[in-house]
Amino acid sequence: MADAVTTVGELRDRVREFVRARGWERFHGPKDLAIALSLEASELLERFLWRTEADAVRLSAEELGALADEVADVVIYALSFCNATGLDLSEAILTKMEKNEERYPADRVRGVAP
Image (cartoon, rainbow, N blue to C red; front, top):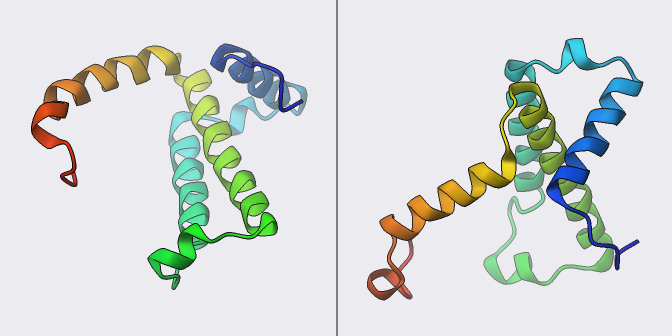
């Protein structure tokens, strides 16, 4: 499974089908999905609470597995949000990257914290 290439569109469709099969569309409005996305991002952040910077990069296989679950939840809710609003995640990312490239030109900000 790790070797398979999956597109963002395929992931979005898989999430849509998961939600549809359970009849959850009525619960997946933009407001509730934005809240769920924030809560899942907070769960990811909580995994680093009270860790030093050094501890935050020395992670066990078990910790990495837990982080993978949390980041997957974040992305799943982001994809659900896109499904609910009709946003194209790939297009949104590419547009935002263009804005970031203009705002933070590599030759001016290299090595400087944003």
